Image (tube, rainbow, N blue to C red):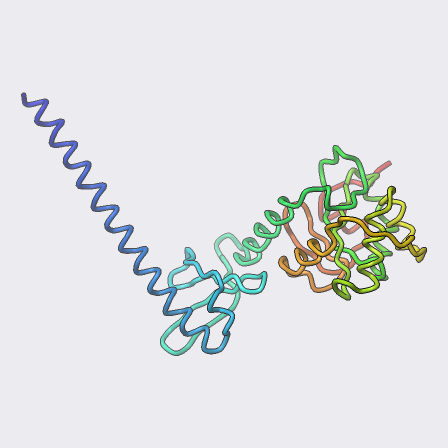
Length: 251
């Protein structure tokens, strides 16, 4: 009988403990939610789009992360004053916002199927870069001239269309014609060398990838995204790309 009573007592204590923890967690969630509402209310006074921005609590005390127009900002609010900036973890020596941004970009790009890209390089490549590119961009053409070096080193180059002039522009239409060509790789190489592609139309992802670029913060071309999600705006020589990836040049 004593053992039975003990088991019953333990079960009751366990239920009570779980209930107490649940109440405590719910109370913390409510408190955090109220604080986020307060911070949002202060932010919208100066930054109206903050009304719909995603704001979450961080591990840093009284600091919240706001995802705003494809990037992160860190917010500390005290009364009528709001401090916005980056969050640095001095213990681990990392920029917390940059890490979060890289993770976000990596996830977004990972979800893009390669059938929406024009891909150069071995299918079984262990490393790759994803490049938002514009056919008429001079530095995009310079990078494309070095794609062979990257392929020889085992780096696959995946192109996503980002016609800088926007949807419906001449550059946009060129990319559509390239996409609709039976040999996309040759058509893209020719177009980057100044040979206008034969006009063609078909179902294509050009508008979609252009919008995707805006979502991840692309403002110019080329924009290079390493396979860890690190985003680098502008041209980098093949040798520097390989150095950053820890890849040796091919034979």
